[in-house]
Length: 223
Ligand code: ADP
Ligand code: MG
Image (cartoon, rainbow, N blue to C red; front, side, top):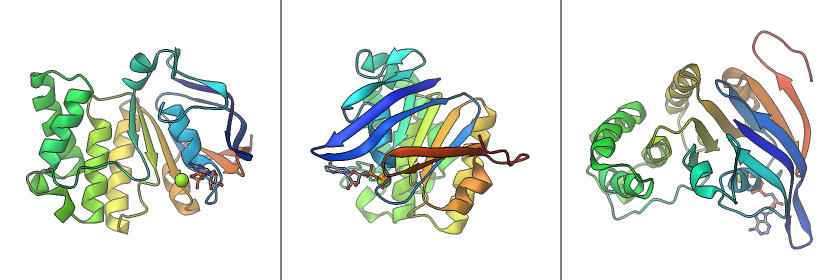
């Protein structure tokens, strides 16, 4: 579903991502693990077309993220580390805005709005101003936006950073269900126990370099 080849990103003289290559398949949850500054967010921002690479290539279901960005981005739902929410809007208004931006019809939007609000359990705050919501609720509004349009790939950058353990467990249940429905899920975290409990595959980044992967679940083989 996703092919990343020889991705490199420089910020001036600083090499944030160095010759990174990996593939992401459907029906799997990938945990991206690594310390702060490892290049995880930079990699995801490039993969989702939010940031240009210095070199290398990203293809989403065969579509180059920069050459065919419309077709590629339609396949992605992205929850960035800091979701860009409009504080003076309600979740319902904001989701409507995002749904239009994603090209959903009125009927699609109505159907999807119900679905994503149910999945993320934000129905009870749908008509409150986002600025009055807790961090956990704001995060769930961001997740609801990512799920609009029912994209086959979901990318989440440190989604649990502002969640309570109970909210984290709920989120993980949602992600496992989406994985079982055939989606590819990428979740960034620097918490080892989270990737262990959730991920089918784990990639470890350090200083912009891929330093290995490991299978979790019923095998402990190191690739
Ligand atoms: P992670 O998400 O793994 O914590 P980042 O991708 O945010 O790491 O950052 C990787 C490296 O690139 C860090 O050293 C960070 O300071 C640097 N960096 C990130 N964004 C910028 C930017 N816009 N300008 C300059 N350096 C940046
Ligand atoms: Mg980050």
